[in-house]
Amino acid sequence: MATTRGLERLVFFTDAITAIAITLLILPLVEVVPDIAAEGGSIGVLFDGYFGQILGFLISFAVIARLWFAHHQLFEHVGAYSGRLVFLTVLWAFTIVLLPLPTALTAQLNPSPGLVAFYIGTMAASSLVLTAMSVLIRRTPDIQAADNPITPRSFAASYWVSAGFVLALILGTAIPALNYWALFVLFVTPTIGALIRRRRERG
Image 1 (cartoon, rainbow, N blue to C red):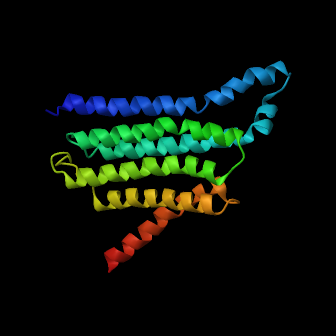
Image 2: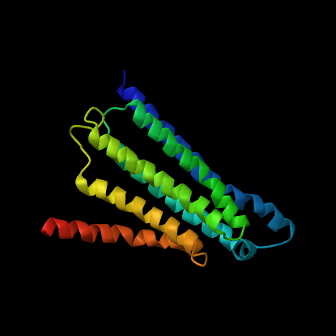
């Protein structure tokens, strides 16, 4: 039988995994500090020689933080849990745990369609799982909090974020010169979604 305590443990589980994953992102940069110091380098060497690694860390940090916040907001609408919700939560946690790996690879290897697909694809998978959870919660009254249901606007926002990641994945792999910069499409898709929603509301 599902209990409030069980739901709290599920949330704590994902919070802990996210905290660990987001911490792991910085470790490769920490590990190069002794080498820079041994060679008599300065902080300038870190920024000049490891700029790509620093950029990858910042992007992945921002993405994981955004995905965690979306998960946090989603569970504000959860009053109970089910086996399907637990499965999707564990699947989402897997994508978060996995992300530091492609992040490390992007810092060490030149961009390639396969690597871009691995990196952005992991992010897209995480966002798609969140959208799947939104669908499950909306369609399951026993799970959704009766006093705080998911609004159509919140659901649409989740959909458009996932669509943005998928579009970035397609563009980044189909256009090699674009590679990771395709992620900037995420700044555009929510605006497009909002404009479409407003037109529908007016119509």
